[in-house]
Length: 95
Image (cartoon, rainbow, N blue to C red; front, side, top):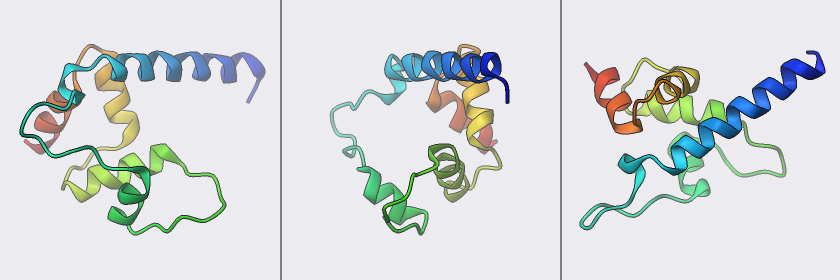
């Protein structure tokens, strides 16, 4: 992978994370269950914490699979980058 391609991916990821941070469907609302910690999410997909890097894209894909969705992290990223919310993506993928 050349440097400009890595830089483009880094910029795109940064944009995606910014959009996620502003996604109204991810804001915890009254009466909703609290957010899970990373260790709780790892246990949910059958992973155990070790002193190794965690592939968050793979973790998200596994969590989507646990919800019964046939979609992966890159599908969600594309959907959100095109103006959708995480809730809309999940509801669309369930259909």
